[in-house]
Structure formats: structure tokens, C-alpha cells
Image (tube, rainbow, N blue to C red):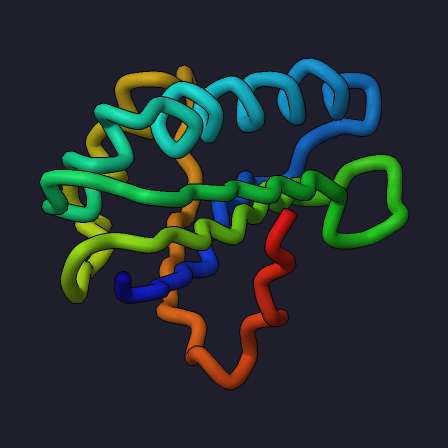
Length: 121
């Protein structure tokens, strides 16, 4: 199996603290609806199968101010039969459809040397 990992982030414009919970929930739902769905993840990776997939999500304001952007980041760690790439264009379209506001989307591959070792159960 080939282990691949990607760091994905969604960055909002400035969001009032009062709307933080609502905005954070919408970002998490958008990530869960795409990265948390096996069929969608396979489509984004252009892979026929996954033997293992984990997705870790973190949401926070970029600054501790009354109005600050919110960043939702995810680490996608998968084992696939072959090498895969993450289709950012398709992912961006899915996120645009899921959210009622714009976000800046970034993606980068995580090198194998940056990944923690897998623990066998």
C-alpha cells in the first residue's frame, strides 16, 4: 500500500466572534461532507479503493480579536493501492456548493518524513 497525506485549509474573511460557532460548524460540516465521505474521498483522490483513511480537523480563529478570520484545517492520511493526488479543483467546487460564503482554500502534500508512524492495533 502507498501512504499519502494532505494538509487542507479553509480560511474565511473576518468573522465576528458572535458568529464564530455558526461559521465553525458550517466549515466542519463542509469538511465532513467531503473528506469524511468515503465515496467523495475516493473521487477527490482519483483512487478505486482505500485500505485506510483518517481525517483530523481543527477549527480556530486566526487572532484573538472580536472580529477575526476563521481557519478550518484538515489532515487527510490514506493508504491506497497506488500513488494519488488530491483534486483541489473538484474539492473547491464541492466546498463552494456546501458553504454560503467564500473561503480561501489551500492544499499541500505532506511528506512521508513528516508523518507520525502508524500504530497497529
